[in-house]
Amino acid sequence: MTSEYQTLRVRFQGPICFAQFYRPEANNTINDQLIEECLDVLDRCEVATTIVVFEGLPEVFCFGADFTGIRTAARGPDGNGPNQTVAAQNPEPLYDLWLRLATGSFIVISHVRGKANAGGIGFVAASDIVIADNTAVFSLSELLFGLMPACVMPFLIRRLGFQRAHYMTLTTQPVSVSQAASWGLVDAHDADSESMLNRHLLRLRRLSKPAIARYKRFSSALSWAIAGDRQTAIAANREVFSDPRNVENIVRYVEQGIFPWESP
Image (cartoon, rainbow, N blue to C red):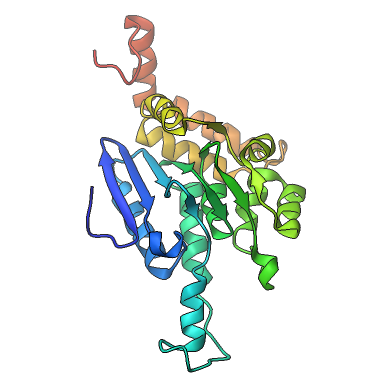
């Protein structure tokens, strides 16, 4: 367990990084420091880490923007100095963080327990795999405050399609884990989500870093139009079947029955 972070608890277990949002005093909300520390963790994961697991607390995964921080900026540290022109948090680093989760050279898993709201949905939607326990609920509360989930929407639409993301935005009501699973926001859920997570990790850790990086680069480049994606798909197919490492793995499997992750 690393100790240099103030908003995260991070540990490395072989090729897996576990990053827990840890702001219990602030309902696991997002501030500049949390974004910076998440980006720093991802920098450390570039070389050898194949899986990054984001987790929260048992009652809350991540509750979105830090409204207490906004209140402090609006009223001053003593609460007596109204400021009508509060500078908004720069949205670029947070969007870039989610973009990195969606396109980076590692598999990103969100393990959700309890509440995931507003910006917390951004982490969920940008993940490759979402595993939840049966207490998980998902909501977008922004419009209640005159805001909108502007940076969340591109990632959420990729997961749900426009209409369901639109519905979540307009209704602002919590969505149960079973409903989220039926929509595709959650990939798997169980009362014992920890065991379910571990079962996924046993399988996913067999994948190599180059294969993950290549696949995510390819999937991020798709336009999801079968005619328009023809050349991208053909080029990617040629790339993987001409990689000497892959050819060697295939030959060894045919000749010796040994899978790529197994030692000779």
